[in-house]
Figure 1 (spheres, rainbow, N blue to C red):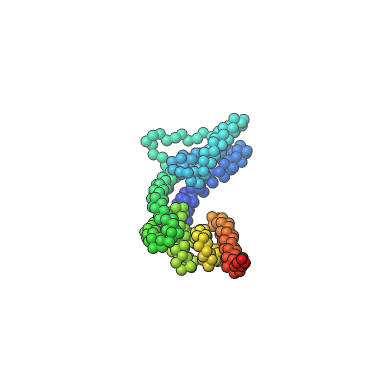
Figure 2: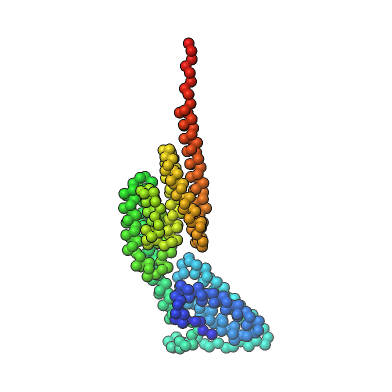
Length: 323
């Protein structure tokens, strides 16, 4: 009749424990309804007591607007449903309502062994969550400037300012390296803003090397990006390369347009051959396909312009009118 403590689950953290106990409350409601159908008021009261104690502890958490907030809201409905079930059953003839223990008077010590929920352990989890949230806020604030610098570097690359762009990318890498010990100490801090910075950094550095050497860097040269961040950067790169190719097409740089087209085609072919792509990466493939079609159209139109110009140059000049 007691809630399993986090300390009894050596391989779990509060990140897994809290969603687990919320799911347990929902399952306990189903169990309580079955016990109610059997008119087992003692079991029903025990379930109600546990859920109420759990809800009292969870109410003290600041879940913000995350997934746990949505999950926690369901616990309040479980409590209400338990209360209704106990009340409805108490009105039935022949059902004895067990007398519950009276609350301890103020100042009277409570034996921890009698508690169905370990309040002290939940207090520790609240403190850890508050420290984590404060740390995450700090990471988000630092990432804003880094992401802005990475985006600015791409703007500079389109303007042909490769040295300025590389300096900004180096600055981003230095800040990322400085933050890595904190990120590695708490893996949950990587998702979101920090991962977005690495993806933007990967895109910028990939674009820089493409403009400089015509190459697409492998993932090994883009540490500390992981596979998902690298793939996100590579797929976003195709859009920047397409913009660059459009600018080259206005100058009739056919060879550079073809270089861009071949690169996008190679990226699309290599990525579609991978299995188990994350959802956000898979969605970007549609954009890459549209980019390749656009580059095919540009190359085709350039070929028409080139042939038209050659035909005009080869055409004989009209004979002069005889006097």
